[in-house]
Length: 415
Image (cartoon, rainbow, N blue to C red; front, top):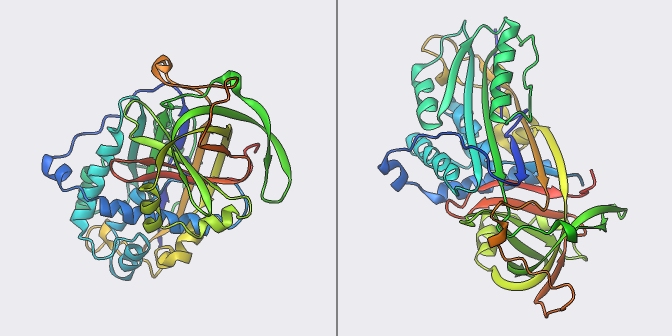
């Protein structure tokens, strides 16, 4: 019998759940040993960024709103990679951009990354949670379980998948990790060939360092890629921003919290260009170069409020990138997940990803200490006027680790 492995990089997802408001309680992540933290290698995070760009470009061939979490997808698949062998392992390494990297170093780096991200700013909540749910009638490798438990802080539980209550237990975990925003990920009955659910969730909640004034939000026109125009609530803010202008686009950095370590980067292609053209330039090399060119400028910003959900199976995109063998019964080799002699008939049946994002004006309770210069009547001289009134790209990043936690496109903020 072929054994199914479900890698749920989210059906609920990667729970890229973003509410711009006051903070919430963080999950407790144990602090790694000092040598693990000191040996953290940002170049490995850059490889994850490049994987994220490749996956994003494959997924976003249509003019539709989208968002993925490179960090979360990578962490979930890295856990599965620990159980891969042979050609399956080689294919996953190439797609995940980790070929030639010692597995212990990879796991250690991911453990440090999880800690650094969750500790980025006391005013920003970024929770990373992993879990493994296993059927009782299969013998799993203790080495595999110990690795993902230690380096990925994954909860591991065995359940009787034939019991409908098993799905309820998994769904309760999902509900808790997503703060009640997602109530179900598994519907009973569970496929009798499924032996494991490998789940990752990332929950983000932050507040702008300089919030938008709600009184300045007005209805404005947004021109979609198809030429149609929609009317959407658009926020306004003026003041000092980290700003970049090239021959192809304008970009701006909006930081979160007191530390300003995490931020949303917004990229607006020129009117004579398009978001599709901009996507072709996305690579880690260009990303690093652009980040070094931002300068503090005075300007006006208009940004639409938007709320959106995105759900996608990643099987085909990952196969397109070269990981198809992992999804093929009889060819996939995840023998490292099982005890010796338990068989090598394990394959990934599905990798699902779901994200949710909400962007609005809301600031923190410390809004009084932020600098918001309205200047509507005084009409000062500004270096730029930036109106996100057409399709744009955004990314939520951590400047300390260099990680791109989320990236996405807004083609229609009214959806």
